[in-house]
Image (cartoon, rainbow over all chains, first blue to last red; front, side):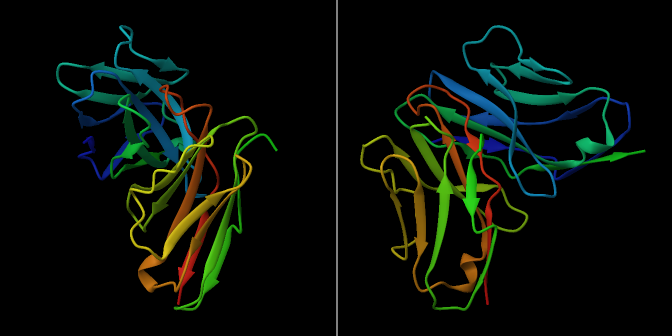
Length: 115
Length: 115
């Protein structure tokens, strides 16, 4: 079984500052993938970034980077230079490689960017 | 269109009625997933299709829920004898293949309200 824990129900960040959203996971799979999705008020789930468990480099996508610490089972999302449009719910998710598995999601963190 | 589409975008129904929700995956994507998101919660897996294989129904909450996928493309999620606790956003996602750690892309969701 897999589990995702996001301990921050809500976060505030000043515009142009960086923010880290926490995510820890638990799995018995040797190979797995970690994902972050953004869900604005419109409700659509927008894929942000992916990290494979065997990737040696931390994933980066523009202003998003994933701070992957495998030994600690953490996959924190770092958003640099926050923008007002970054205000949304952020979900950490994972799936294993043991057969066909759906994504397992955390409960999410609501990020509010303040001008 | 290029993305996953879902219809209707909103559905209001009376308790006890049946509803059908539709999902059109991205062209060429062989894996299709249904998730449910209750208010303020993360996503809960419902059912998953991969090609012509038997679907993984392990997430369906009751036998009132069923889903079909015709011709390996469009999928319909049916909820019979709806209850108020079925009120949620129903999200569909698709990916290129489920046996590799591929990103899932989500549709805009159907917001279901059972009165």
